[in-house]
Image 1 (cartoon, one colour):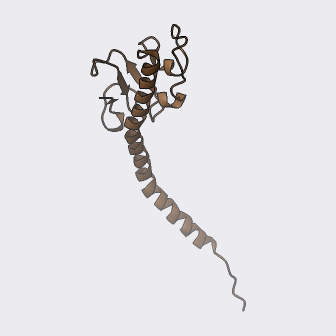
Image 2 (cartoon, one colour):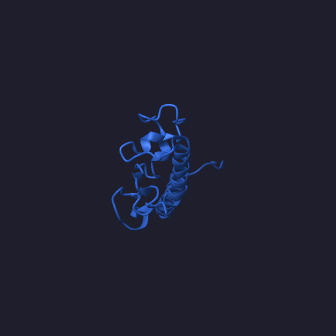
Image 3 (tube, one colour):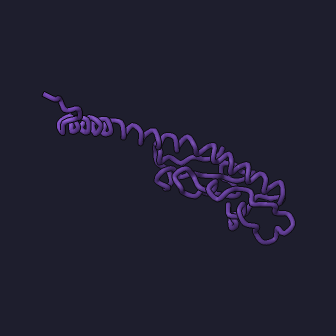
Length: 138
């Protein structure tokens, strides 16, 4: 008799079930790690934004005002002809790791002599805990 080489349907189903079980166990851990990584990216992205604001200040002699906001880093505001040498940042730097725009407050409440940058976290709302917590430049 000749023995067939190959897999039976039962063997294939067992492998599919095992792979599915592993995915169910590992996927939540992977997702939580991805969220944790986003939280860790907020401060470095703020630092890039602070560098862009410093370059704007160096060229223009002031920070963008509240009306101009962070958009002044991308497009020349009126009244700065000849001083503005931007763009000072890429558009994606103006967003936190969750895709929400950073809040820019000038003059700063926590940084009286300059400005505040705030990421409202994953939920994009004030306060919160964990990945929803607010992150401030200080």
